Image 1: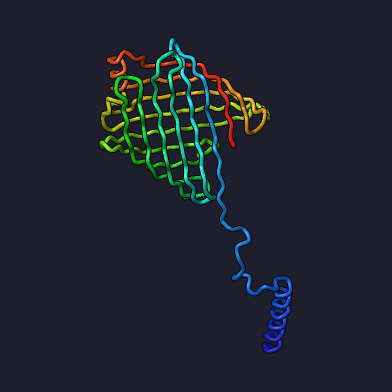
Image 2: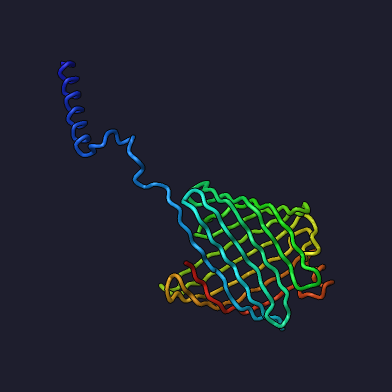
Length: 252
């Protein structure tokens, strides 16, 4: 009886193998090329390109991110900063070049360099920092970017950004944003002292005329804290600012 069972199983296996061979005449499926080979894609997003109106000091502000690569690995380019538009050529700019590697379905590890430039107040100030960061989605679809920076002078700082988007309608989107900055050492030339130094809250409402193009308006509030606030007072700067923002978000 067992011989008949074995013979029947062997016959069934042979029939199945013939069907597979007929459907796939090019040999063993394990030897076939990947039908979805790794491809490189790119995207450049101007999340913020706006005019911010403050008390006596308007500015042009930007926040840009671009990437090139695949699903698991990619190169990132990030830039943010502002330039005064009130007749004074001063401001600050930041540029990051990062390598990103996927850790899980929702989180990426980022390593690279950051370049800061502070201009318009006497001699320009520059510094280069190593970057170790994460980027991903927390519960409730909150986009989170924590990062650690170590400068060429040995100054260490941290920053955490969190954004959330709420679709009010199919075209109106409300974006809320929180940013916290802190430092473990002083960098007075950049207005930074040790401790929790700055918090920024923002709310922007955009209208997506197309997914790739969306004008918006909003409000931001920035507040210096601790020793950084003391330094700002000595320099004659405000420790808190309320600004009205109008701009456009686009990507390609």
